[in-house]
Length: 113
Image (tube, rainbow, N blue to C red; front, side):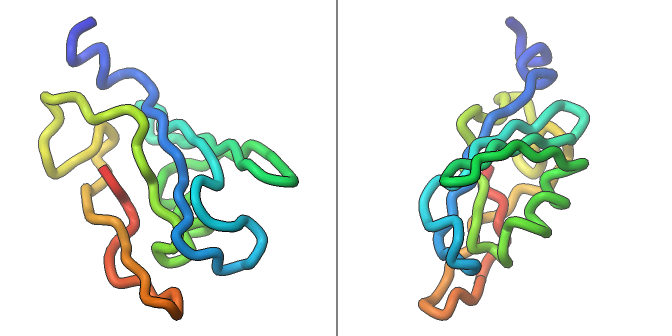
């Protein structure tokens, strides 16, 4: 398989919650997901009420479930070597995970690549 073949495959991730803002999901890995080459996202939620949701983009999903950085993406599949360092396969910006103080205030963006 060539690197261009790899960049056209879906990319798996887990959602890691540092701080449970709602008091419902808990902390740690709360869901697994897939980023598709066209930018769409599916998320399979864990816990007492498992479900699957679909989103138009990572940004849309994190706008609802990221809780201002309390939840971050941890990639299972790595970015192919030929992908520029400043972008993910879908063109999303690459930034550092958010860190939280005890109040839950976010200090950094929530994508982890």
